[in-house]
Amino acid sequence: MRDTTIHFTNISGEITFEHFESYLKKLPLNEQSRILQYRNWHDQLSCLLGIALIVHFVFKGEISELKTLKVNNFGKPYTHNDVFFNISHAGDFVIMAVSKQFEMGIDLEKMANVTLSDFRNQMTELEWKRIANCTFNQKKAFYDYWTQKEAAIKAVGQGLAIPLQSFEIIDLKTVIYGHNYYLKECYINKQYCCHIATTDQHLNISSPIYIENIYLIS
View 1: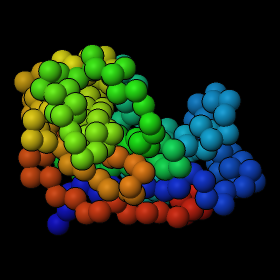
View 2: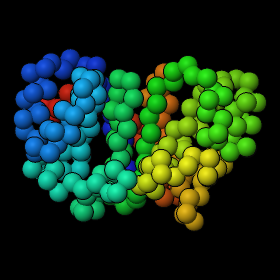
View 3: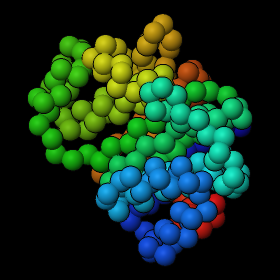
View 4: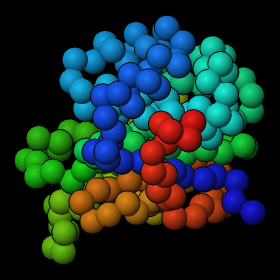
């Protein structure tokens, strides 16, 4: 039986403004304000779909339970109902990992063309050497490390308060503040890179499950 499940949904689906407003009005006022603080429609929709995933998979469809949602000092949301979860969004997708036992972080990135040297100081010497020496797909090698590191600091719950170069990923494992974190890739499609980090050494997950129209079933 798999303890950790991963679900994702598409931002660019056929979601009308009427659908958006209808679901938004069901949410607590603080969540409405959080969504509307974004000026860009795409960002507002990403935020709303992330909340819809929380409602459906953490609170079993009970929107009223959002009132129990807390945020730590570093901005990571959590609950007191013994369910661990984490959300990431990039490009056209919002993705969520859920576990009943283990803390985790997940990071999704669309693999855009970037100047790799701009990120040199975010990697350890060994990590950078492996990226620089990669002859097959250097961009993928970079995004592998980037999403692994982002997922790891999200699992810790302190985000970028932890410098990315302060810890090293070796064989899909890292140590932060004396705790082990284990990483695994989550395949969405060839344009995206995604990893999950967890304290579960025997992480057993299925392929990410696509959820259509999450705002209608929540």
